[in-house]
Length: 594
Image (tube, rainbow, N blue to C red; front, top):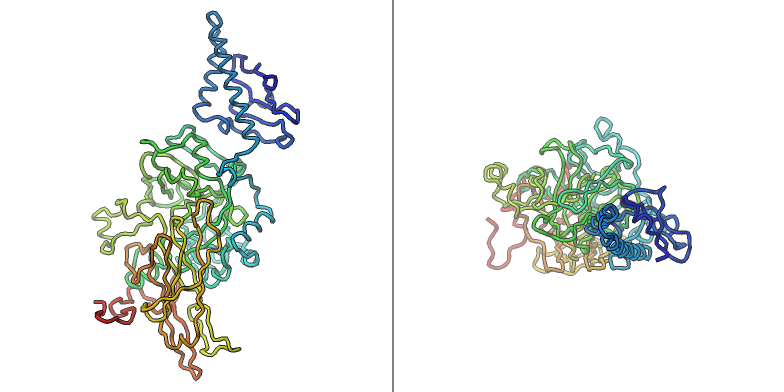
């Protein structure tokens, strides 16, 4: 073709990259020695393509085609023996390959018109205002709260810790003292913000100090059983096609303090606000794996391992925090797993994984590795210390001693990955008082809360009871963030139930439960486990009469987070007795819980 110069293909050395001819209507590819960088293709020819950055050859050729391309070019050009037949065949083969390159380049210029291609696109950081507001509006977020809860200064509480440089919201409730930083927002403040949580108000789970990482030098290494290993810089990552999607993150220990009141677990006391829902921007993992030549599960390619910085933590072989997921899940575009570098339109905050982290929608937060350094494709799950010693739901008889003695930590069936169904009441708040005759004659009260499930399953109903579970009433629940193209729901439901204030006078308790589209429902009673994870019984708020002339009522949640006192379950570990609190009025034929 007169649009393709093949002079460089017969020069007896590896080919030079191909550069566009300036003609505005037709795609031209010509050699350009000044831009020589083996494996790089520069495409133009369209007025829309001028100035486009160099793209790796792998974008247009698969791993096997790349190896054949270079091999055929070098071997055919250097072996000129015989009657010239081999050279002629080589030229013919090179012409076919060159035309293939042209076709692939032309398709690249048109853009990826597949379903996945339409979902992804180039982004800039921070997201421009119009783009961010469009995402916020689509997911029923409110920009007022994003602006109100900005936090760009370090907290003085961290002055004497390694995190004295990290900007933090001063209203966050610290769960493990000053350091390391583990916190949840006040439940009322979290729910006041609505569908999209401001990033500074997002809960934080840190096992140690926040690593000091540099955007300009940080790299993510993709290695293991891959077709082509690579080390990707942040500059390269942000140039790749990306998606922005809302995802609810939930700590595996959400509501753990309720379990600690029954019997002390080995975890600290999360309240019911160990969750947050924000907009995440990043590159789909399946695209990165395919770029590395990993397109299917094989006998030697079955898992994908994620690892953070070395020497980040005191335990384990190299002090890394790591985990793994099945490769089948990683390659599935419906799972929306991304390497996120932005949250709510801006670069990640240090506490949330700057400069890049993994987001696995529908999973517990502990699987979403922050400060990501390595992605490795393997035949077996990771052997990382924290993959086995964190995020497990063991049988209720297993104590810390039994777990060590009998090897319960290594049993794969007890790992906690997908979120289980859960819900909680945020209004009335703990300690809130309410007159039985409201001012202005408004005699209804709006009971509010959240609900969520895992695995992309949507909440289908939330129910409220005022009579100890004898009867249940449907609340009005909303899914503020739309489901994905594939029907997955990665976010929470927000619900409201309007109750006549006079009914509260006759009730001693308000409780809620949720159902999802697989008809999973929350259990009535808690099941204690050693790590206190996955706690999801009915959320119960006591209604107490005040000793005053107006006979007002006040509300009491089961617990207050961290070491805060208050809550009808008490504030001392092991102080609540299931046998004393029968939970609900007995039905006919029932006996008290032994």
